[in-house]
Length: 166
Image (cartoon, rainbow, N blue to C red):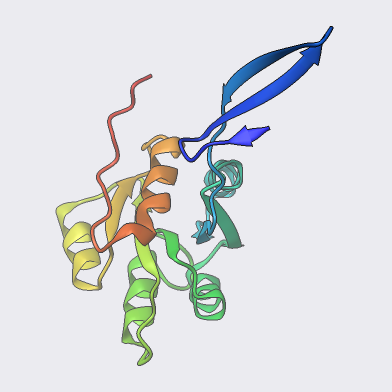
């Protein structure tokens, strides 16, 4: 097998003294997956996002928690590239978690994505004031949420999720 930088692999197969070349497209390996902390008090939503994150080779789930206090502890312990936080959780809401991490003297590299069943202008303003990088509704398709999470290490501005083509 010969790999080319374009993500194409060529296989040679010999039969009866003749070489047959089979060319296939191979997705390039992800050298450093984006590390993710997932925090949501809804078991159903959290399990679904966990499956989506684990199925995406660009991402690596380092912690999954169900309340804000545990989210804060997981972020401080693992220092992930990105934290996906539910807005309304027991102990601390997702915005308060973001504020507390940003208030910690050592500058953390963690980026923050807030998910909520309902994003009002007040919630978005409060999230922005605390340094939240992105706000998404829980109805956003999981594939698009994973795209936003995967883009976390590519610069200061996370992309808007693309409209669902399906």
